[in-house]
Image 1 (cartoon, helix red, strand yellow):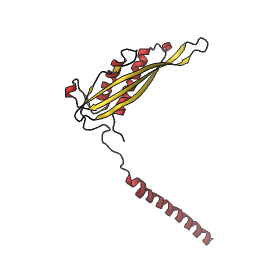
Image 2 (cartoon, rainbow, N blue to C red):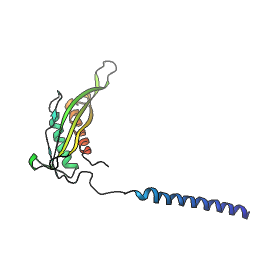
Image 3 (cartoon, rainbow, N blue to C red):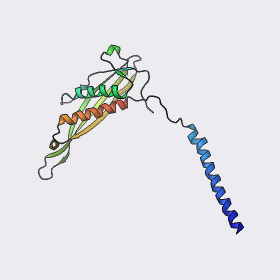
Length: 181
């Protein structure tokens, strides 16, 4: 009986030793090299102000460029440490872009009549962000896409969906302005 207990004790001690060895090797080898959390900003720190140029619109849909430019300026003010300035001469950087296409597609239709139940607006943009102090391109022809759906049965229109898509696009552009991890 005493031999069985000592064998069990040795097995338990071996398992505990093995577990401690694994934890110690992870701490020294893997986790010891990690930097951990940081309170540094995700955005380039040398920039303080941004001038947002009116986006150019290459599509046949009008006024979306105004919605996008306005949404982007508001997002930059709200979600970044940067200040939006009204004069290019006072800005550290300038962000500009071009709406390359605005598409509309059918998402669902009525089975019997074939009338559209839900449609989608897809917005494609190319964005540039230039540091005016150094001449460096912080974003160089970055392609961004955003989409939003709408339903005429819910009293929604193309304008409603294009405004939603412009807001989603502005959010994606602000995310693209972050420093790479």
